[in-house]
Length: 278
Ligand code: HH2
Image 1: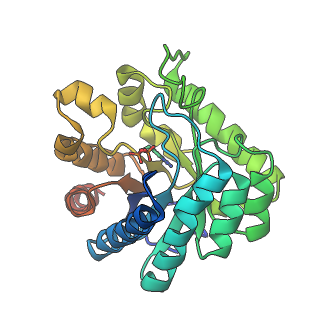
Image 2: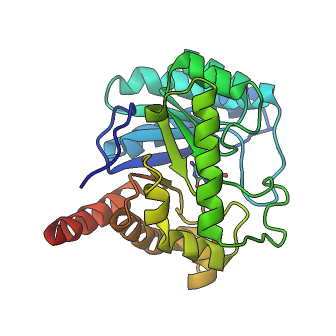
């Protein structure tokens, strides 16, 4: 399979495992427990085959409120430091943040790339941080902001609109000094999209891939799967694996998922079929 050249040092297709560092407001003891649990989870995802672990300290679920820079730093930096030390060269560490200060500190603590769900729009200093670090960056499409993004999102042609947005953000990144080869693009499944929008984007992923940068797909356990299946989050693993298989067939390169083993299996089968037809 052919993927665009990239400065991200992984082989495509690959899995990006999700490490959410969830809040704990009880005590400092709780904070250590929270850090250790996140690190153990990240190591487990890599043992299962993730090439990248994506560490995030701010939920972007629909309706969620932002957290302060200080709090986000306290959540993610110790986890990134510990994962970097424990993983060595075995896997890459990504920081899922839209704050320049968090990205800068995380990169200094050993993160290899930045995953910015605002595509460099959330913090005016983010583009410079990424350009100076020379690190890979994922630019994601989102309509509105997490607090309000699911309030009746509207598009002309959702695939064309998302592609236009991603093209513009890629050009912006390059104009700010980020190498084009350092950029990955993500249609932002679930970020200001109805079920129909998410399905249209999955069906039209080849048009996103045609922009010439590796495509990241983040469909894992998301709400649209619950709408299709009538299933709670933990029961959406098979549905997620189907999106992974279909996504690979349409050219996606990186799959951001909670369940590494199952999605690696989906990739292996989808890849065998795609290559048999090549
Ligand atoms: N989705 C979420 C968070 N970060 N990054 C990229 N590049 N693509 C995505 O689709 C994406 C993302 C939301 O998913 P999840 O991690 O399950 O929830 P939370 O926002 O609580 O971290």
